Length: 71
Image 1 (cartoon, rainbow, N blue to C red):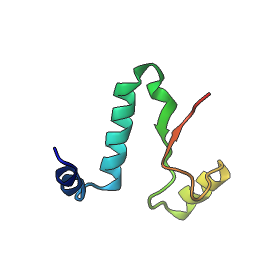
Image 2: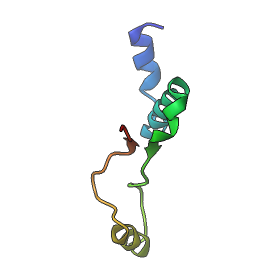
Image 3: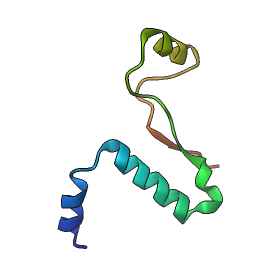
Image 4: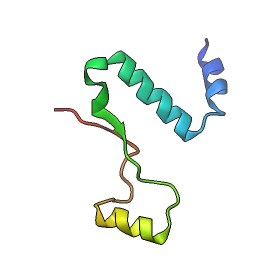
């Protein structure tokens, strides 16, 4: 595929789809450390009680969607 064809294909991808592709690529490329890359449930709509519970547990606004732990 050309760069233009890839760009056109990816224009319809949601953030969720892109994240899924990235995580799958990483885990297939680096299977020995694949679980060091993981998603952080830090977004989306939550009710007041659930939101308060997440803040109580340490949730912070603006944290990245995916985290790679690299020793």
